[in-house]
Length: 63
Image: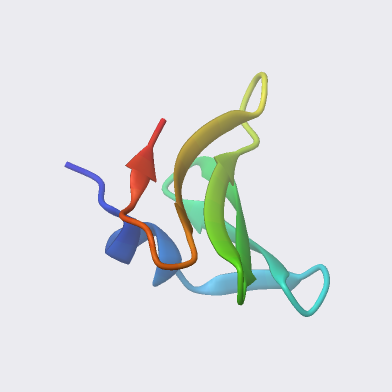
């Protein structure tokens, strides 16, 4: 089962901005947002799909 620790620890393929990186999970390109107020993972395969996120001070939400 995929969890947020696995998603957010994937190696960075490309830095898009100081808060946004592109990573790869097998064949799946994943955008990771790591901001002080929120973190999120979004799949770019097909229609963009929310995978996981966590607002500051809240528990992780999975899509």
